[in-house]
Image 1 (cartoon, rainbow, N blue to C red):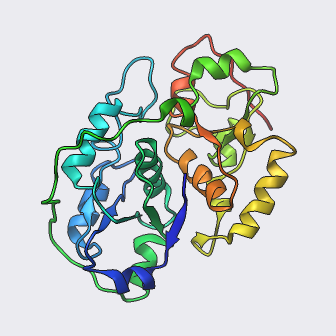
Image 2 (cartoon, one colour; image 1 turned 60 degrees about the vertical axis):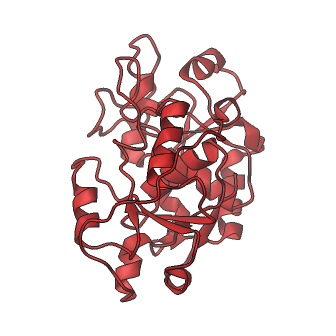
Image 3 (tube, one colour; image 1 turned 180 degrees about the vertical axis):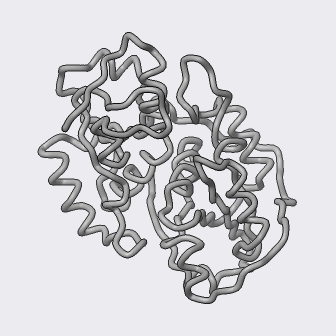
Length: 283
């Protein structure tokens, strides 16, 4: 998957360009309505809102995590409704770190749309630089039916069953993007059980940033090379709480030129849905 970033200055210069689609992905895991409210208050001119739970997630089941992927046909319909399929360039942003923007980036790549970039520093940096904003509610008006997209789930995803079957082996290196206190099991504000998948290593997504922006590809590559410890990139499976923040580490690896790692979409919240699956804690 191709990973690229747009600076706010470059995006500002491109506003109004034909084929440019800007997606506002702001969201709060503790207040699901906050992102849309923020969008309707102030947003980048011409942006359309993409909701984590209504657009980027499927129905929650007893066996699923908190933000399961939608079925591919449903996601493709959403892409058509949002008018994303025929864009020449998509730029996604959230409040700053790029967490929710990275989820959209990955999901578009999942169905073969690769001209997608993340706005470096997000809306927070956009405002800090005094760049133009719109107020009021915006909606996409150019949604069209889409029939030519197909998912690449088998190549980009790993299932809970595959991970469970490989426990105790060197088949996968599971990289967990959550904060260290959640990974270790010391705190768990969102899920019913604390801890991590046995054998996983922790790479908090915030380590991908410096002053709120992505580190250079060279710096990120050096850090991930050290984390991999000789593992092939194809062995890496990204996890988090519900398959959202894991996309940030996956994006960072791709941006660093380490292409081919995969996502465990269900992540920790799906893993613990089956009480027979083992969990691990650490000091």
